[in-house]
Image (cartoon, rainbow, N blue to C red; front, side):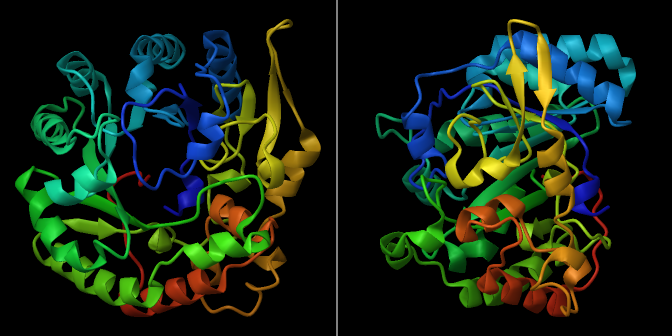
Length: 370
């Protein structure tokens, strides 16, 4: 199932976060806003819209802060969605894993898919993703992941998402063994990418100079790790291979688009745009706004049509590419942030996707990937 087929409504619950990750992709944006929480009436209107216009009954909880920091709102949204969808409802959450036993128990009873952002063995996790006071987060995350892998009631998936940097790139085999010891079978590792700031990366020379990621090194080490994981019954994925399980003119759900409701009252097409107000170069990904006074969501038809036009056949760099329908221009949010254009191209990523498809080929995923 190509990534674009993962139709769901996402709720960006709160800007409040209980970790201080060193590479947070929306840190600047979050700091520029007061703490905000998604309007429950907006969430209900979003569910009504989504269930009326899509066959899917899949809901998802996501950032820009830590989702479980708005736990009561999460439970209220789930209950409203269940009222509308009944047993057809499926629930996914992406979390940093730093939550209480009360939250953990609720997730074990209600979640179908739990993705924990977790960077590996304690020395990596504690360096990359500490608590605000500098204390290590690994002991808490380990305990919660172990519990969920053995207690999730809905025959669902508990997976982890790893951010790969130059520092941990060569420890992928070690990470696979570590996660296996916690009962995890599904892991997605994402290469480090640039934070969303006030202008695209291509217009900020100093940002480009100060950022480094060895993509060729990642390709070599990833292929080895992918094969090792497969040999022991695990899966080691990356967002570079999201669409190796089918063919599509679209890269992802941002091109449908499906709604992502932001805490400041907008409808975003992508996880990379967690605030709709003053989105700067990410503005093409904002395609609706909540009208609290009239209790209605206003959608921008012209923005929807523009997003839907972002196909492999309309991408200049994709027209003669042998893997165009396995990539379709790559992640729209990352590409827009990098190039400033919906139809832009990141040559480094293009090279990576081509190289990985040559090594790995088609894949059949057994679950709804992140």
